[in-house]
Length: 106
Image (cartoon, rainbow, N blue to C red; front, side, top):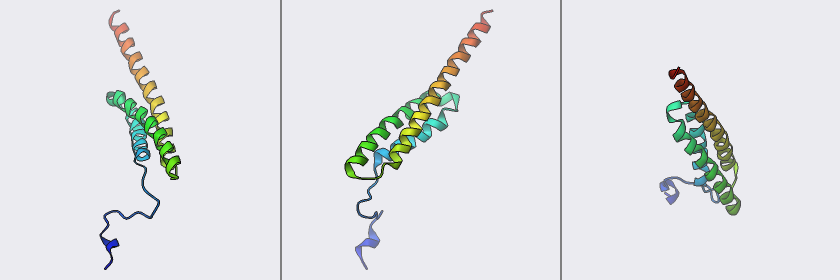
């Protein structure tokens, strides 16, 4: 029996995960999905912005360590798209509230 059987998560040498890139990807995905739900769009706008921050930091870490930048790039792009959707969603909510207030004052 060898000791390799008892390692909890064996990874090939030189292929450690970049946790910033994973965080960027998760925040970017949640930012896009949550931007279509009006109740939580403010919270997911923050997540999308965090996706941009984590994605850029993940790309820097990947360059320094020589790892692949795919997850970091995907997280960065999804964060940008989620931020755009979130801003548009928040503006739509503000416009709808203004229209309701104007209609109520007539």
